[in-house]
Structure formats: C-alpha cells, structure tokens
Length: 445
Image (tube, rainbow, N blue to C red; front, side, top):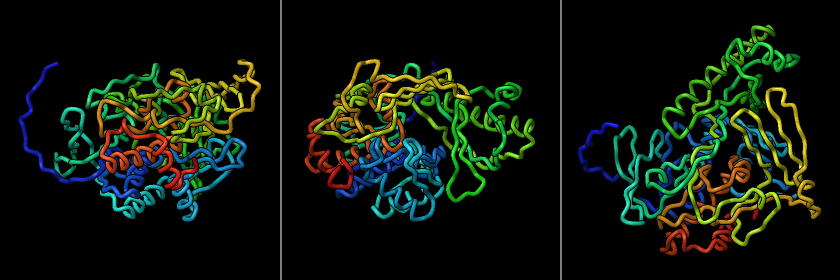
C-alpha cells in the first residue's frame, strides 16, 4: 500500500466533559443517560442523522419481552421500560406477551423520543459526527478526535464509552479481539406499502425469485403502529460481507436496496399486487462484526442453564438466535426446545437440548451475564458496550439483540460515572456496586 504523510495540525478543543460516548444507538444513548443521571457531564456523537441505531436508522422496530419466560414477572426494566412507556403513551407502540415481538413501535417516533430524552438530561449531542480517533497518554485516553461539518476537532473527557457497535475506538487503539467465524449476516430492512393478504408470496418467490435475483431466504415482517397499510420488511440477508469495512458495508447497503425492489417486483408481477417501497433503512440491520477481549467471555451454555452472578448487569429472556452464512437459523430456548429452519418456507426441525444433555432440573426463567464481560484491562478509562461484546457463538446469538444491548449500555454509563467519582480505573470497580447502582437507577435486577 502506498502512503502519504498528513501534515501535523493543531486541533481545536470543542468540548471538555466528564464522559464521552461514541455511538448514539439506544445502547449509547442509555449509557449517556445513566451517566448523566449520576451527575456526569456527557457528550455523545452519532454518525447518522438520528439517535437510536438499529431501532431507528435500521428500522428494526421490535423489542423482545421484558418479562420472564412465564410472562409473569418483569425481569428487565430501566431505560428500555421507560422508553416503552413513552412510546405507548404517544400511541406509537403495541405490547403483547410474545417472546420476540413483545414491543412493536414506530421508529420515527422513537427518534423523536430519544431527542427529548437527551435534552431532558442535558446531554450534548453531535449528529452527523464520527469519532475518527483517540489520543492516549500511556494507558489513559485523554481526548477523542471527531469530524463533522465543523471540521476536525477534539473532545477532552475523563472517561470514554465505545458504543459504536463495531468497536471503532477499540479498533483505533489496536485492542485485542476477534471476528465471528463466520459472521452472522446482516438483514437490510425497508417499509412497504400494500397488502399480502391472500397472496402465497412464498410460493411465488420459490418459483420465480431467481428471475429477479432474489434468493429463497429466511425473513420476517411486522406492522408499524400508527401507519396503516405500512409494514416493516426484513425478508432477506446479504451474505459474505464484513460490515465493519467500508467496502463490505457499501455492498450490503446497495444489495439490500436491490433485493428489496426484487421482492416487490416479483410479487407484483405474479400476484397482480401493487406493493411499493415507502422508505429504506439508512443503516443495514447488522448482526455481527468485531469482538474485543475482556476479563470474561459470555458462555451460551452458562446462560441457558441460568447461571447467576453477584455482579449481574443484565437479565435476558431472548432465545439463542444464530443466523448461519447460508441462511439457516438455529434457536435454543431456555425451556430446552431447539428449532432449525431455513428458506422462506422455514421447514422446521425440532429438538430439545435439555433432553439431549439429560437435564431434569427446572428450566431457568431468564439468564444473566456478569459485569466482567464488559471490563477490558488495557485502558483505565474506557469501556465498550454493544454488539462488539466478548461472547461465544451461542451467547452472542442471544445477547446481540437490542433489549440486551440496551442493558449493557446502562451498565457502561453507570460504571463510567462510578469510575470518575472514585477516581479509579474501570478494572478496579467492584461489579457488585455497579449492580447496586443499576438497581437504584430503576433496573429490575
């Protein structure tokens, strides 16, 4: 590779703050809010034109249940529950006792509610802004380099939270990590106008999809509250691309739009429908890219067997959900059930992992992970929260969904404020104290 030398520049310091958060997904926003509520001054930067990440820019408008698997006790609360209440109050969300689609909402209203939330907490936000780099003094970060319409500048902070999803700060620092092998493929989403009632669209795609370059692929869809005749479509994957690279992400976005039009065109041609695309996501529904090493790696079997921790920072009920590189999907449930399916007709294959292992004890109603899953020991004032988490293939299949990542964001925000208050490194914090402050702040732990 050829290189050029970039001239040295004096960068203006645009802000000095307590906590700097890179990434404005709900994970990042909830980290910022938690830190702010504990008295920290917070700056948050987001590359898109809105906050919310997968839930808004990617149009993925479903959150899983906040209750245990019996749907009797609420085991998840905090900011996910707060935001759900706001969405319901505005008429922009529907609730149901369904394990995977318990909360269905309008992503546009969520954008607005998140705007209101950060303003209420006096968090300074920069949209259309990336964290391009960080400056360090040995094992301590002293400033983040950001780029936006004002050019290149620096934000000095006492503590830094990487909520970029791909772990952009971790990558800039050369932190040790790994990639999924293979990575779970992304699903670009779109809003569609028109009804498929009475249309055997699955048969049409199986018989004619190849004419439009559309695969026989697993997908899902749901309605959008308040938008009559509009549905969220997540009907396909884009395989073989790494969304943490510029080329891979570009390919996924463009191929996603092509496949969306192919989906509508093949059905319109053979069913006489008038399906139309209303809007595309501005960010593909990315499932997996990079992971970074921390003190503890989340283990799927530990989660499925209901292991409990004194320093638990997350309660989860979402099933293990692993998307293969060929379009197959494998589910593992806490009650022991396993399901494998592939293709638009799914063709279910059932099993039971508890029976296979000879487990007869009562099944867990929810799982947990410890604070140490978030704790890296290379930099004293940095924590990463999001899908870059350290987890094996099965654990990641459950933890990567938004309600779980929202909780990791809250834990990161609490830990950041505590580290500042105690003037200590992130790896010197007592996880049990982090848990106590999460509970104090409203989490159902």
